[in-house]
Image 1 (spheres, helix red, strand yellow):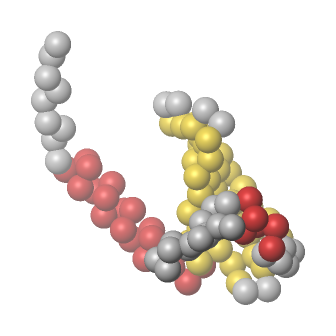
Image 2: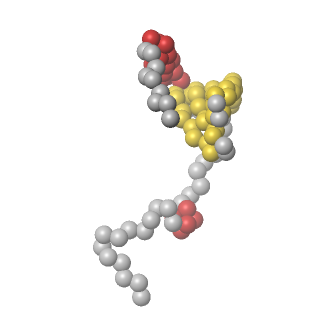
Amino acid sequence: MKCMISNERPSPYSPRAYATSAPKPVVIEDTLKTDKVQIERKTFVFTLKENPRGRFLRITEDVNGRRDAIIIPATGLEDFRKMLDSMLQTSAETPPKAVAQE
């Protein structure tokens, strides 16, 4: 007989947690535009998509087969562009710090 202490909880990461959860419903997404850029060892894929909830930009970073993504709703793209423009301006105006020589 297994005794569980009151503050112990089953892990949501156990194989049983996935077997009991219902599958996510399939959401149909239309791809409006895709573009890719290679920077050093990273590949960035920018995909503008649309689904019943609206338009969004998915930015996927691929580094040696490992992928991470962020999604920006279309309503935030203008704010994202302004922030990126500001970062570019600061980068252009600020001289890089000296790198230590080994």
